[in-house]
Image (cartoon, rainbow, N blue to C red; front, side, top):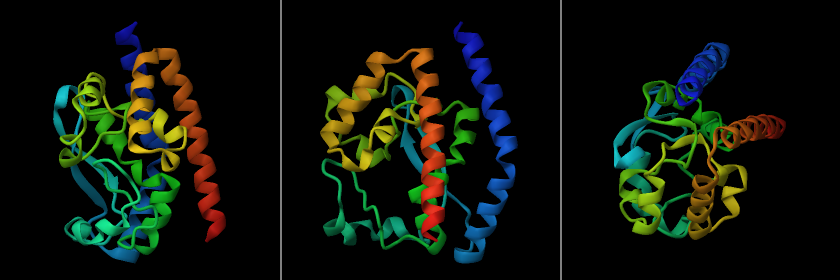
Length: 203
């Protein structure tokens, strides 16, 4: 059953990548037009069993944005060891749309094909943030592959404290089954469509 599920998901991701190829090309062109190169943002994240891997996203911020994080600490809207600003001043013109619609995550299908991530699982954190997590959460989160879609995102990540986020991840891991993952895939796909439409209407 595990092999069949793994094979099915690989085929599904390949089909999604091929289907979304025009979207990848359009978004890449928009990023180049509005903010130049590079198109893809790469960042070291922590995955299964603590393995560090390079995660891919469409670039949403201007070049050198990571170096400015320290100076923006006062704007951090997240508690705990993470850093998040919903309307980050470092966003490019197209970057805010990509981030708020969730389209910036599409390159992570490549991470799934490489085996770094699954379609569903806890969101992988940057190495410096992951290392600050309480061990009681860290060890459990590392016991499964990180994912593009997570229960935390679906249940309203912007409204949760860091503690609620970690508990949400643990709740997912406790309930994790093939059927549950497919349920979350459908919910995540529908959520992405709603977000894209919502952001397009704001343009």
